[in-house]
Image (tube, rainbow, N blue to C red):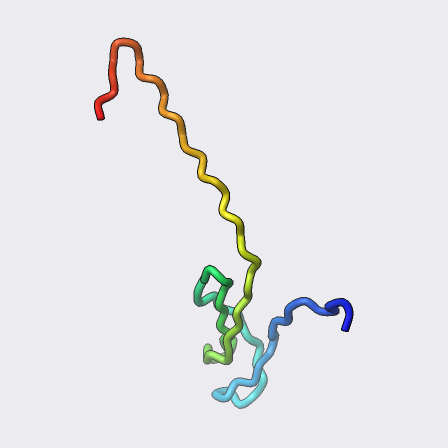
Amino acid sequence: MGQQQFGSFTASELYCPKCKIAQPVREHLLLVLPSGELYEFLCRQCGTSLGKRTVTAPPVAKAPVARAKRPAPPPGRRLLR
């Protein structure tokens, strides 16, 4: 089909069965997973959960952990292990 024209969409309003009308929503972060993040859409008027979405992130390469070097002991002292 060609190039991707749109990125991801985020809902600004959803139908709330409790309010019986489309209401503005707020996104609430539920979980941070290795594969991405799970968000919940909540009605701004009454707080009812209206849906969820998962945002997947590309895998992050783990950087090597640098180990700190121990300072040399002062002259005349030795380290006990």
